[in-house]
Image (cartoon, rainbow over all chains, first blue to last red; front, side, top):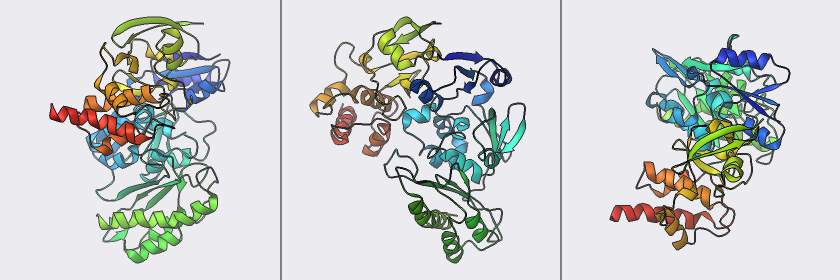
Amino acid sequence: MTTLETYATLAEAARAMAGGQSAAAYLGGGTIVMREVNAGTAPSRIVRTTDPVLSEIRLSGDTVSIGAGVTMAQVLAHRDLGFLHPVARLIGGPQVRNMGTVGGNLFAAHPYGDFAVALIALGARAHLVGQGARGVEDLMRDRSRPPLVAAVEFARPRQGTFGFLKVSRVKPKGVSVLSIAALIPRDGGRCRGVRVAYGAMGPAPMRGAGAERALEGQMFDAATIARAATQAAEGLDPPTDALATAWYRREVAGVHLRRLLERMERTP
Amino acid sequence: MKTPVTLTLNGAERAAFADPGQNLLEFLRRGVGDLSPKYGCGQGTCGACTVRMNGQTVLSCLVLAEMAQGATIETAAGLATPAMHPLQTAFMDHFAAQCGYCTPGMLVSAKALLDRNATPTRDEVIEAISGNLCRCTGYEPIIAAILSVAQGRIRA
């Protein structure tokens, strides 16, 4: 038996999640929790909020803040979030993009979560209800007891410094064999503050330390890109699933990283 | 405990009681008797349950019925008013329905596309129905049917 509790504010929803007699699941866009409801495996209490703050997109100066309840379709409809359109466009099909949210994508199980991959590369922080802020990357390390996220916030990337690539077997709607997001700011021609993130290359979206080391402080050229490609899968332990084996994912990670970096290098 | 839910379905106000945890698809089929949206996967993968909720296509199996309180819902059953919608005629003309299970969802996605883009390209049609799986007809006749309606509009 599943009962729905609706609260006017995020704070009330957070209190309801923490309290209560039995476990509760937080319902955002429904694309994750409703699968459990339909399968009869959801907790007995479903908590949601109609707090309008969840659907806010705010841009002030260089800071971008996206409410956790903003859907992929709303990201795609926002002109100033153009750098995120190639990410949002490749998540689910049209119906899922109308429902699935930025906050929910942070907790989508493998092989989902491509938006979280982009947020990690952007160095985004998640504002948690009543618990301050945490890096999205840090949030990915333990998703078993997810906190309630109000919004994600990051510095808007300079033109041409952010890139995203998703590899799937079925097009236009297919889940990730792997996905890669890269933030490559340049200072005097050299890469400074590089962040590379992968999806479907581990239990959750994560950074690619090998690629970052190969790029950081170097000129963004063919030789650097080639070195980054050879170190693309370093330290990663990708899963084997119906889409690809761990071996295959490790083998092709460098190929796809090189393609993404070459595309970014060609279009500064 | 059952919850009363009132919504506008294809232009008419309808009300019924929703069971706890009941999804919108079940509510539409069992509660108010619209059998056009189909139950496929129950996971949001197949698109057979696609309906429009307040104008947007959603997977009705992933919406709690209680959350559709006050919403405007459009399903494939509302397309014929009472004459066949051009999309329905085109699906027949192009043999775009074999077993027919995906067809109501396909029609809802196609209608949503044509409402916002009267003359889509082939790629835009493919993108618009990418959330709807068809396992027997094949996508070509479906794409051709939707494009034929769009091209009919260009000529008109």
